[in-house]
Image (cartoon, rainbow, N blue to C red; front, side, top):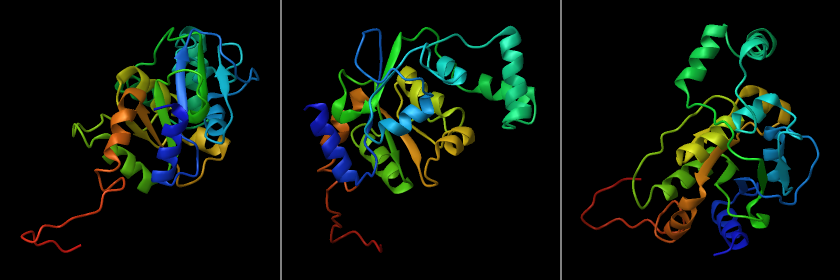
Length: 234
């Protein structure tokens, strides 16, 4: 099944307003907009139909650069500036200790992951995605996760909070886990994400089975059937 067909099926069945987004880490040179852009803005525009190729030169957000493995995690004076910004500027953490606790208790940011990242609608992906990312509401998120676990029943090990680019992109890529996240407040506010938007990331190797579950699962197209000997009030 090609990416265009997969995208059409997912969008129609789940009644998505946004395009399913393909994210691929690659060392190949591929076509895409070379403009400077942040990861969180590229993600939003990818869900609206635009292709982006992001590398260390056009990644406009230092946080996104290292969260997604295009640069090194800050250290020394650079880290001190980051701690100050997050506690006194963005005011996302009460103290530098709280920030460090969050970082240490979350999965580590990757380092040297690839030369560039493709981010665009699944239907136009020029190479196999690492993940397919859905910008969806809670009802759609529930359906995606139900369809994703239909065959194996394994619950995802989620990272709900933290930087959007980490929880929605690099964590599911490195862990191989389907993830649901609310993202971070700064990214949501700056990019004007809808108030009901959740981010669900599915490793591409799970997409084929997810689609195959659609006709068999009530989270897809299957009809609910209640046996005669099963007393259930709904």
